[in-house]
Length: 169
Image 1 (cartoon, rainbow, N blue to C red):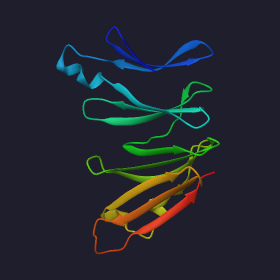
Image 2 (cartoon, one colour):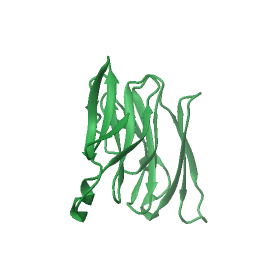
Image 3 (cartoon, rainbow, N blue to C red):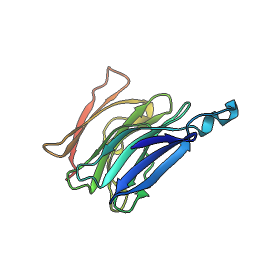
Image 4 (tube, helix red, strand yellow):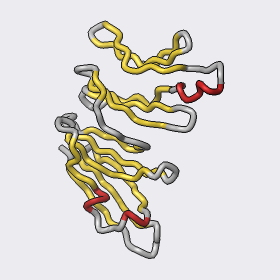
């Protein structure tokens, strides 16, 4: 739950009847020089087992995603800039994430092992498309089959694209 108190935004998780502050930031500013310290927490989403909480933090000109392990109340140390798709498999041991942001230059489609925090599949690296010249990424996750589905196509529409998939269960 998100709360605002005394000029601060808080992201709070209630566990075993006790409130735990997961994140906090200024909610307003008096001086324009403080605008970079303001964050709004949004897009809260629990994984299927409730083990992980994903949320967005947005500020003046930025947005980033954070993941919290709700069992030990610690942040999961994954850098997921501009992530538009974040999905956990049904057993919460793997994560699929995807991003395409022309403004920031962030483009990726990856599967992670959440125990080791290592990439188990890098769709861009494994594709036949030259991503250095720009690539369109279309991602979705099929919950029924626990499959990450990625369609990659070059910005040059005269060249063909590639469909890829990966079961992440």
